[in-house]
Image 1 (tube, rainbow, N blue to C red):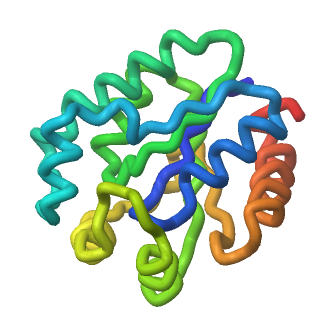
Image 2: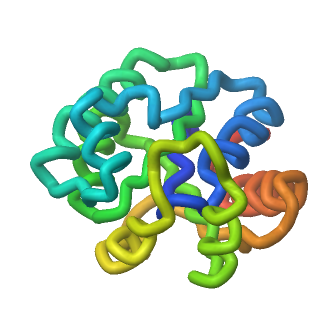
Length: 170
């Protein structure tokens, strides 16, 4: 059974909110992936500049390290993991890693981002993230949920899908 989950997706999809609530429900540790970005990445994003693959290498390394250190306790991490290659890198640290992708419309994402304050990631970077998003494929351990419901509804959806797929013991 898997003991690591990454709540993934573009900015504003609710990775942190869902991740924290899911970790509570599973009684696992939650790690806010944004805290593992190098300062240079945060400065770049805050300036409205999208990260490139090279910028993401140290961030993904830090996430992977946290995943490997979490065994066997269980951990939920928020991390965009937008591309298959990023998820492949994370899987090198934790083979039975499950990805959870909340699905929202661009309009819903923009509305959320425009209400959010105090975050380094501006709404102007949403389209660059949507452009590179590669949803998980059938051969990846993953589930997709409706991200437009309340956090409680999203946790329930996630737990039901995890239980039905027998990916996590609940």
